[in-house]
Length: 138
Image 1 (cartoon, rainbow, N blue to C red):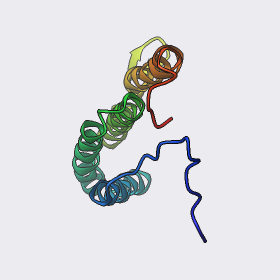
Image 2: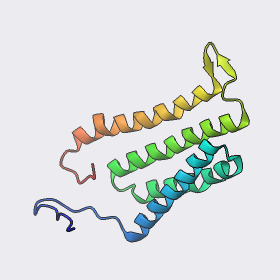
Image 3: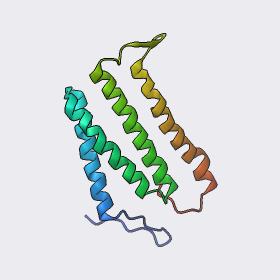
């Protein structure tokens, strides 16, 4: 199956092979972390936080020249952080402990999840409309 070439007026965005390999490995670590969470394999789940988070930070750093990539990759890093906190709260058994009113410690994960959404809102609502003619990937 042939891949579609960009139109003559489009600029192609290509990802270096070494970056793509790192992204693919990142997915493996992320899946292992979440499978471990699902299966309550505490040591593996906690161990997988580190490579998953580190690689997501490296990916964000490597793509920083494009605001669209940077915003999405930072949001992913924050998502992984929130997700990891949630997993740890369940593994350690404090996820259901009351924090205040009907909120528990698990609900603290909404803070980083919300920050990730704010970063994406910044990009789509503010940055992208003001930079319509700049080369971006989204």
